[in-house]
Image 1 (cartoon, rainbow, N blue to C red):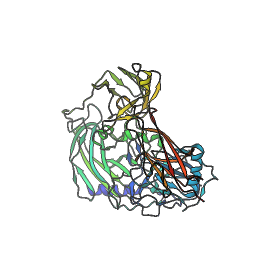
Image 2 (spheres, rainbow, N blue to C red):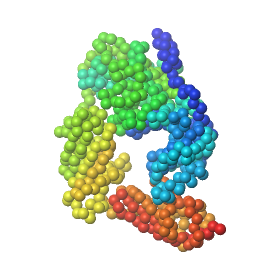
Image 3 (tube, rainbow, N blue to C red):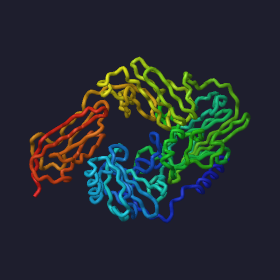
Image 4 (cartoon, one colour):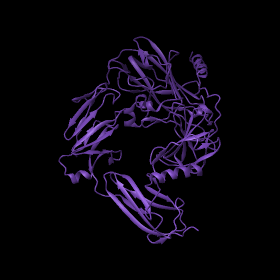
Length: 566
């Protein structure tokens, strides 16, 4: 019987497999084999991955090509995020995005630097006119790199539709070798009401799996349940030639052979991406670093990735009835792993109950709240959180405030306010609001100061406190010394750092003229390209002012010599 059931699933899956976009002739953005370190829709921190990450052999500088005719519609240069990024709009309405670049092609780089010098800013966002920067399919537009928040050399590549919604680039013919079936790390059952239970528990229950007779099929031990339950799965996919644990393409569930739930990563909007925190079991992720993907939909979930959903994917288990649930996990190449879960409807006394930490502050999702404790108040707008819960606002022995804990996800910003009236005006200048990071060290939270009130707007719950920063940033020359000749150098490099509030801004000049220092915040490195400006004198006076987030600044000056150009 199981064999017939899997034959049905195979043909059902084949009939509804992904359909590639027709009448679109895009080429690859790189001329090297496409090996992925990240897939479309992959589960990331508070968002879905909006493109694919293409490996560049742990090197920078590979030619990046326009995938089709079009015009450069946007250039965005930032310290973090995408770093150096290009947006290319095509005549068919799609836009391709190329990010974490090392540099742009010569004509685009010249356009960019002209604007950066005009605005005297490294970080910049430009929207060229459609006729300004026209490019042809196959034209080199940039070189791959590691800029921004990139964790290693690669090309982040996207294709967006005319409404700026990111689409799976694999739908456009990007070929990736993949003969591996998705891997399932674990399957979990949830009791979705106080009276529901799974194996006499209304806590999350991990199911025991064994290999089935069919290839890439697993069978769960029989579970006994009653009431409304849901399932979750922790899975990943690997492509050929890489060991990266990438995201899966599709997850489906069937109850007694009938479709019950599915989600597929073909397209989503940026506006919905943060709802990833309703797809995954967020508390479990924060505690155990496991992204369990729920195969049921919670009330606050507004994701558009779902299809074939019955009763929000929830399974109503009735006394005395038996159910066969099949979870099917698929990658883009239609490699499939299935898990069969036999369920018996049986009412049992709940012996393992989930606990609620009750406080005086019940925060309901559909109302705004203002909470106070000591010198701190927290303003929570409507729909900030995904569900109702008891909020913990307390002060610890070190004088730090616990703004609940980081195991609850926030969808919108809430505001934390500190009363700083007990500090002098001089002391306030050096104070900032910090959160406690993973290393149990203070991390700057953007602080607005107005009189005796400091505020920060954030989406992160956790521990917050005031920190004093009286130490200005450090500045250290890397490849030059004072009063030395450096004619052989192509670049001028300076390292900057700030141990507490962090570097906020910098400004460099040579002989009184503003120069473009490119900033790599991961390395704390400022780099100036000597080809940017031609100087007619041999002696050069460098001045660099670096300011931290509370206003402490360091002024570094030095003199060096270079041969003049004829």
